[in-house]
Image 1: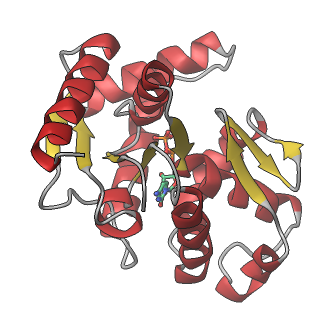
Image 2: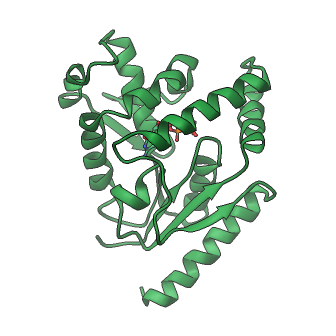
Image 3: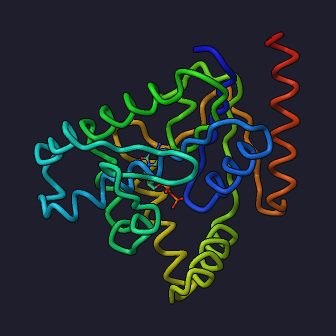
Length: 222
Ligand code: CDP
C-alpha cells in the first residue's frame, strides 16, 4: 500500500471527523470518514423501507454505489452529506453497522479507497480491522460530558433543537452498542496512541497528531 496511512478511531463525539478533516487539509492528504459511509447505508435502508433488523435485506448493497470524496458523501452520485445527520439515521446507525454483511461490504470499499496515496481514515475499527498495518494509529477519547457538549453545540449551529441530557443519553447508548457488538467492536488497537482530548482544543489535537506523524516517518524511514 504506497503512501502514509493514518488511522483515527474513537467513540461518538471524540472529534474524529473534524480532526481528521483538518489534518488532511493541512497535509494535502485524502480524508475518508467511514462513519459517514455507515450513515449513508442507514439512510438508504430507511428510504428503501427494508426490515432494518433483517441482515438479508441489506443485499441492496450489491448494486448501491457509496462514495466519500472531499468531505462529501454520495449514494449513487446523490449528495447525502446533510441527510445522513438526521435523527432517524443517528438512532439506527449502530444497529445497521452491527451486521457482518454490511461491515464486509463497507470494509472492502474502505480498503480499496485507501490503497493509493496518503490517507487519513477515521472510524471505530480502522486500526483494528480496516488498516491493521497503518503507519500511525490514534485512539481519541474525551469524557462523555465534553463529547455531549460538542455534539450539542454542533446541533445548535445547524439549527437543531435538543436537550443536553438527551444528547448525553444518545451518546451513552451508541457507545454501549458500538463497543459491545460481536463484529469489530469499538476498541483501541494495541499499538494505537491514546489521546484524551477533553481539555485540548481542536488545534492542539491536530498539531499533536501531525507531530506524531512526523516522528513515525523518521522511525519508519518512509
Ligand atoms: O456521530 P459520530 O460522528 O461520532 O459517529 P460516526 O463516525 O458518524 O459513526 C456513526 C456510527 O457508525 C457509529 O456509531 C458506529 O455505529 C458506526 N461505525 C462503525 O461501526 N464503524 C466505523 N468504522 C465507523 C462508524
